[in-house]
Length: 554
Image (cartoon, rainbow, N blue to C red; front, side):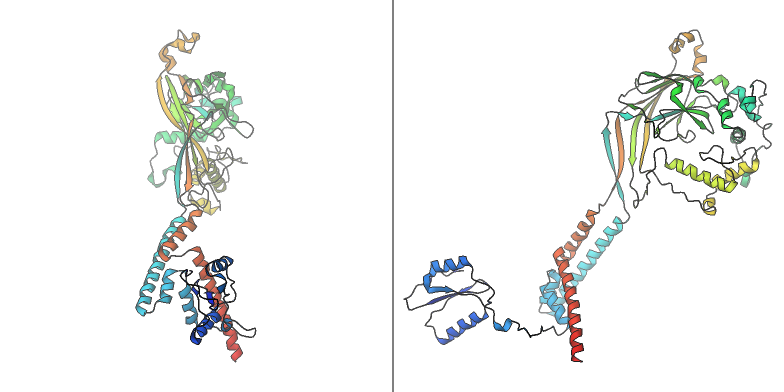
């Protein structure tokens, strides 16, 4: 920047050091001719007066050249200054303004179009710009199309807990009605008037009902199995009884549950709550939880922990309606109602059945993701919501409610009346009734649900009569195996497997993806986008000024 080779002259010679706006230096002798003086004057006049010489540069000038060198301030040419009354000259046309935008644009393709001297070069860069716009729009569209489908990924996480909530365990006898009370059921007798042995037990249901097969079940020449018809006939009689009579005619918990332990501590049939079921009669639930009662917890694993039951299915009390002997076992969330007809497994007498559990949780994402899950209250579920929805549909269609439903109703349908029985059947079958009666059922999947994976094993039990106690020591082992069941329910691990939905694309990725595509295809940055915005504002301002000039000329 500085010329250190300048030789110092005599005192009469004066050296002039000039710093222009580009940082270049120049010097002239005082005795130069008029042309040099004129050139120096021209350089001086072209300098801007808005910048003072840097103090460091001035010190260096004095150090290198002594007092003979004088730094000058760069001054603006008066021709570049606007006088107070001078008007701003506008570009002559939109093309001139656009050309100036292109030339100073930070978008490389635009600047090349604006600064190119030949038409061929302008066309070449225009094609590159158009190709970049097409490629960028295509990739951004593909990404946004995938994003607005709201896809999810499933994360699988395994957490080992110190203790776990023990599930609800519901047990049902596969026989709904005691054999000695079947006559009372078939004759629809109240339990207070039923002595049991005074009522004959028919060999079939034809004498108890006024129809052989409901007409609604035989539409389109459908042939029904005898077992299915028997089941419908029995249900029609069974639900003609009140709740108290159905409970009285079924197996009682004190007779059904012979022994109970939980984590080595004794429990009894009084620790079970009643759950009436339309197919199995009296069912009993262990560890039923609600808003005022928390479920039991366990910190132990293995077959020596958890719930151990000894059951007596009273096979000698089975009616000819029951086709199999044993018990129905349902493992479920302690806050939810069990559904033995849809869930559960059958366990056979004469065996010790062992159920090893592991807890599995599922977490789903709500709207707008595809599952559209819903946060249900404790004790509620999608299954319960669907059931209530169907009951509302039947109630509207038949003017009565199904007797085995969960909704309270002023009048329950009489299943001995063939018309009402068929109405309930058709009401559950036909989906169009929801539209007809304007019934809206919003029953999406649960956002958080719990299920239990079962590992089932079994062995012959009891090995000897004395395994049941001294009072059974002299009884026939085969007779005991026909009616006794041992059941163990425990956690084989406290590890919980969690399946959790996560968005495939986070919201923060949208700007990243779109910005990345714009940068790759067009070389755009955030600053360039603001520059485009500025140019739009300037174009609007130019249009406004142009309109004012045209109005002034007229």
